[in-house]
Structures are given as structure tokens and as C-alpha cells.
Length: 325
Image (cartoon, rainbow, N blue to C red; front, side, top):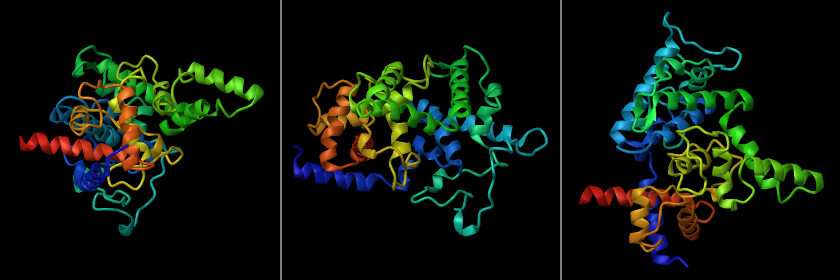
């Protein structure tokens, strides 16, 4: 049972840190670079994939990638390249947009505002192979242990997912639904759904891991994506938080078919350290799905139905503590 005083402290810390200013210097600053949901979720997935190590370094790499998307969109003639049958640019009134031309979203930070450059579409950049120039099939390292070829494989897989399902969210929803329906379907339907879940490696997983497993199953053999849902999968759980939590000044909440109650807290160094210091997990607890589930279950007492909100409290507390030392 979580101590009432500690629960109150965590809620106050979440209120303190879950603000638009959280995006300053954070990879979430890129979440609202695009106005179209399909672009947002695809870009966010690549952002989450590279969000490890020194922030200054991976943010510089992401800035370079998005600049390449903008250059590609302009084309040699200075006009945007788009797939006219799929992308419709509706005119926005001044009341509907912020100073960056984005649809107004609660809590959008000024730091997240990027100047629009000729109708760039991240989805189109992927679908038309525009990424191949920026990510040639080279074993030269792009960032840390990910090569340019690794990133090209990731982009190619994302393009195929969108071609087959329409969006990344639709693809995850389909596979997550198969896993969740296994216990509810009857007779022949049960056999069919159980077989599908087994094919995606979800049949023996606890409920808490089925959402991340559904996401992982879309990227078989892709080096840039964690392949074991029983690991910490910090980057994937952060991406899921971005996609699922609604009413946040940071998280996008695009996947209204998923529940915030099903999210796990992303385990990074700050979260692990502060959780151990507060007695929420054992001092030597490993960065694993088991630890994430244990911590998330405790945080559900402080944040009923939305335990991942504790990520802001624990992460912010850790960053503040580091800066004060």
C-alpha cells in the first residue's frame, strides 16, 4: 500500500513537471513538428528510437533528419513533394492555429514550434523513399551503435506498415486486438485469435506487456527496435505514453482506442534511481519489464487509471536532483 504522503508528493511533482516547458530540451519537443496525426506518430517513433545517450547528441541528429525531410519536401524546384491522393492540406484560420501554423493543442510549447517548410510530410518522405538519400545503405554509424543502414531498414519498415495498414496506430491496434480477444472469443474464433497471438509472440505474456508486444511484433529483425517485450523497452514505453495519454500538454493522445491504464512507466536512469530512493522498488532492481510492472502497479494507487503520469514526477525529480548536485 502506497503511503498517503508519498502519493500526495508524487501528484504534486507530476503537476510541477507535466507542463509545456517539459519539452524544452526533451525529445518530446519534436512531437508537434507536424500537424497531421499520421506524420506525428511516425516521426515520434523515430524520435523515440534515437532517444538515448547524450541529449545534445541525439537531438542534433534528429534536427538534421527533420531538416532533410524539409529539403526533400521543397524539391529541386522549391515546391513541396506530396502524394496528392493521400495528403490534403486544409486551410487553417488564425483562430485554429498557433504561431507556428500548427493546430492549437493544449499546452503546446513554444520550443516545440518548428517553422513549416512547404508542406513537408514525414509519411510521404517514408512512402516515396525520400529517406534513402539521408540514410544510404552504409554500415557507417549514424548514431551510437545504429548505422545508416539500420536507420534505412527502420524507415523502410515504417513505410511498409503505413502502406499495409494506413497508419502505425492502426497496425498496432489490429495486433493488440487479436491478443486481447483471445480469452473472449469462442470456438473457431478463439482458435484463430490464439493462433494469431502466438504468431506475434503474445500468447504467454501478461496483460501489461501485450501493448508493447503488439508494437514490437511489427518490426521483426529491425535492429533499431527492441525485440524482447520482457526487457525494459524504455524507448517503446515512452513512445506509447506519447501516443496514448490524453489531455496532456506533452503527450499527444492520438490512440484513443488504447487506455492509459494499460501503459507502463518507462524506466530510465532517473526513474530507477528516484524510485529506489523513495522505496518504491528495491535498491538493486533491474531495468526490466518485471520492475516496470511492479512500479506501475504502485503508481496506479497515486494515479488511478493513469499510472504512467508518475513518469513526470520521478523523471523530473531525478533531473532536478542531478542539476542541484
